[in-house]
Length: 129
Image (tube, rainbow, N blue to C red; front, top):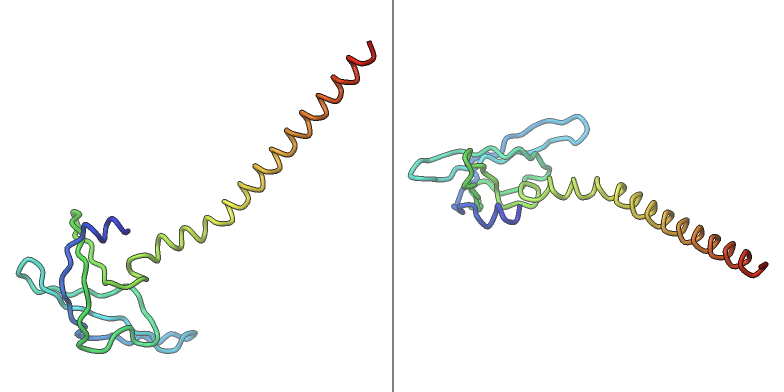
């Protein structure tokens, strides 16, 4: 995502509205709608993220990143929009990383124990002759 952000076009946008959603568990959630101008055309972006409290004040200026890819992906300059996906994947991979490291340590210990046992057995065999 960092490379994507560096290569994306950066424009100013303004929060024109924040849509209210009622959620039984979390109460009221807010979803910002941002207007910006890109290539001479006025556009609207509806953030996929709903939060409580409101993420912005109405009329607030925000930075909008527009990807240079085919579909011109749009993101606001917020942690959740830019980095949540990669962070979630990293967090979900931690248990697998731990299991892999533990398995490697156990294998290494078993190999060492086998090598030591083999050396000890060879040592007693040659001494008996």
